[in-house]
Length: 190
Image 1 (cartoon, rainbow, N blue to C red):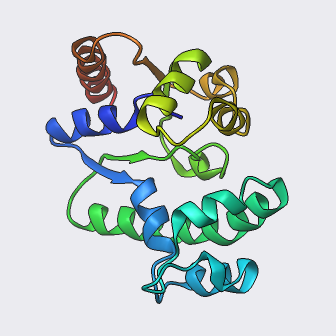
Image 2 (image 1 turned 90 degrees about the vertical axis):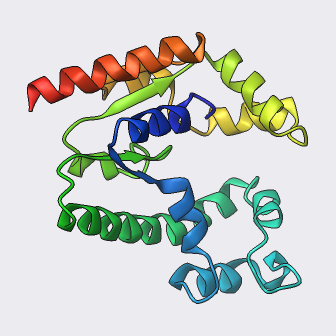
């Protein structure tokens, strides 16, 4: 949460790397007509819809504060995101991209890392992640930010999987240099 993943993905895009943003795939997974859409309504009721019959993410977010509801949503959405991810990877690969970077907060949680060649982990200290979350979403309380962070794998656990680790606590220019160095080193490895 708020570790700088998106900035690092965008830095890699600037270097010409094909990337996939799993947050966007997650949002796409419950659009009208997608398999998860109907399952979400069946599970949580029509109260999660907005006036245009779209899934209202803020309404859904309030429901998943309850662990049981959060687990149900994961069971519905994660497999659908994975299908979309696999499709995106196949599409980019068929277009000649041999290296594809996947930004996914839940890469390890969802066990999607098992099909990846390398795991690049972004992290910041927990206090920094919470401050960033509160700044990004003024409607979020400190307790909610703590709960979100507490529901995720710890930095220590994530880092135990890392081939490369980025700490984005410093100025953006420092992180950009980290990204460029990691990219150049990876290109030497392949």
